[in-house]
Length: 188
Image (cartoon, rainbow, N blue to C red):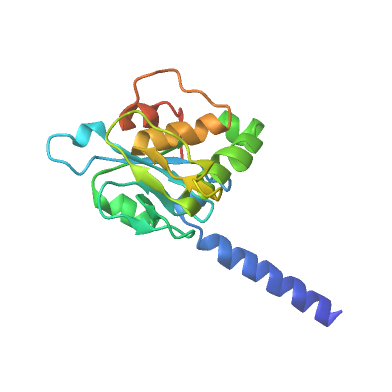
């Protein structure tokens, strides 16, 4: 009896303690929240910069600059940064999501949006200033070996395309980080 009560008490305490240390970004356990901040270019801050929350609470964001190495060894401009780094880079606007999707169609976010974002992080992606983007694809080289062509995105087209993989269309054609952020009606 004593042993059973002790185990239950330890489990209860560990649950309470771990719940106390949850961060704000872990409200939506599915990931897929869109975080936004001002663009770090004088005079263009209003245009914004967006990133996608991964399951581990870090923010996936397309950045122009020095490429890093993806987990598959390709050069990549898709960074997975800590939440605090994203928030402290410039004026933070907050995080948004679609409550309807999180509650009623969570499979779209967990099975398509977040998984595709993780896949793109694995293989890497190139940055473009253009609003034209493309997904990664496989092809056979001249020797018949299978190769992977990395995708090419801007921060807003990255978010847009990840949600498109889940069958979620945005109600506009012209893409800007500000528009992508504000299309999500619910604040985290």
